[in-house]
Length: 159
Length: 76
Image 1 (cartoon, rainbow over the protein chains, first blue to last red):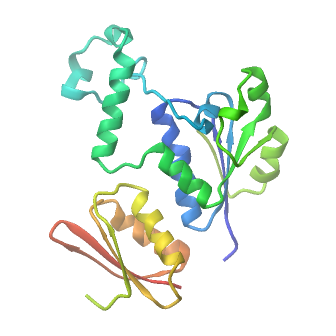
Image 2 (cartoon, rainbow over the protein chains, first blue to last red):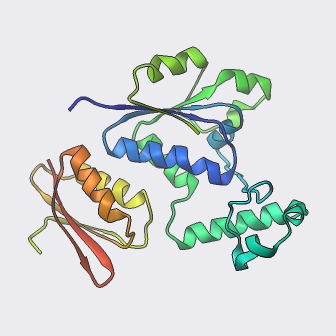
């Protein structure tokens, strides 16, 4: 069986959107895929040693909320100070109670499985990000580097 | 249920952890040895079928006992 290839672009830096790249990459590795994730723009937050990601109910009408709040709670009030940290803490508790892995754990599993993590150098420069705050084992490169692998991939996802 | 060589309890774990743990355990086993997995994630039923098809490790048995799902996988 020839090894299949999965290329992922991770562009989002919120707690909820951090999951798909790591879940899919780790699973693909377990299935024998060679996998690369290219982190760009807000996706670079997923490479921080200290993951401090939040989930926001703002502008997210599809997000289920506790006590059926998504049905009666006025949308505008989700903009109140403290709502974001409250929702983030609730989401984390919910995930832990359902046996969903933490992001740190999934990311570690990806690294163990030799998923290649590539950080967009342009974004690092643009936002003046300190790469010392990123985990080890990250490669810094540009769009052409992404296509080198993506061009030969069987599956390519933009998340 | 048939004999097995190693057992993995993935109870309480959700997608994709049962698959990842199974893969890791299988990696440390010799070809032909059988791994028994216990899981509570209902999605694991289809996932282990797909895992077996894609990795070539044979899914010998798949069953449900008292709300838990059990699988026997033979390392390829």
